[in-house]
Image 1 (cartoon, rainbow, N blue to C red):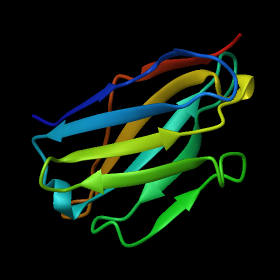
Image 2: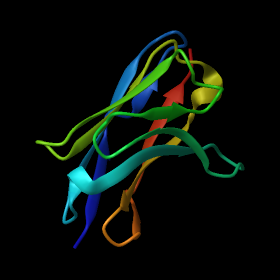
Image 3: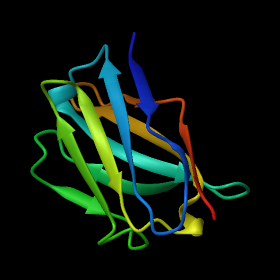
Length: 118
């Protein structure tokens, strides 16, 4: 059974930082593309950042470029999202997604709430 468990969300003031983690199990992590998505209230889920299986390439939404970084530790089967210079518009539920490259299946975590407010 595949499990993706996000952690690290919370309440932070504008300009602050948070680091989200997503621990994976039940899939070949080192052969999986990992992504972070977010969904704000009343809006569609959007891609925030993506990292390839070996960590050699990353991609970011324009709205977070220069502020967020994505990384992974294949030995720990964990992907991270470092979020700096947070803005109120970053408030959303953040979801981890894995795509198993061996079979094309996609999996979602349960999400973690990030609230940026003074």
